[in-house]
Image (cartoon, rainbow, N blue to C red; front, side, top):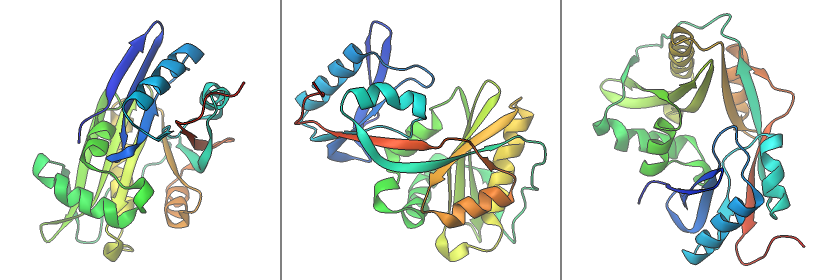
Length: 240
């Protein structure tokens, strides 16, 4: 499985590749904060069809970011909550018996095992997905939580300027209720604040009530509008 490729042309810079290693479904990812042109999207869709993909998904997009994709025939696949932490109060990064440390290359198989238990099939990371999350922002932090030497949770957090992003948080389901998620979120928020961020964003599925409750208990507040993952089959042309 390979990392995302980058297509460039004019003002457009789009990343393309397979969604979680599925050879029939592509991921088409725009540059954060920059909407693709209609011609750029058309070129990317043509390239994905040429590579044999049958459908294409976007990452989670804000409402303004969704507009050019909707014009190209994309529809909503799943809606997500978007929450923001203002970093006015950061929880202590402590957990019952767990140790937090820097994530290492040898931790990746164990991290992916935890991730697979924490998320349903559609949202699970494969190795390239984890690698992309760790390189999506100019600076990033990859930390794991361990109990008795075993990885039981992790987070990937990024920062771009004054804005932090809690890219991923997962805890082994058998270890819920021990403060591990709280410790990992606290570690992420503390790192962002020390690096100069003024707020941190996180998104979560509308159906993931446990995660939503955790984030709100730790000081995250919902943004006025959420996010959506969009989808489009590749055997149809754009709307006329």
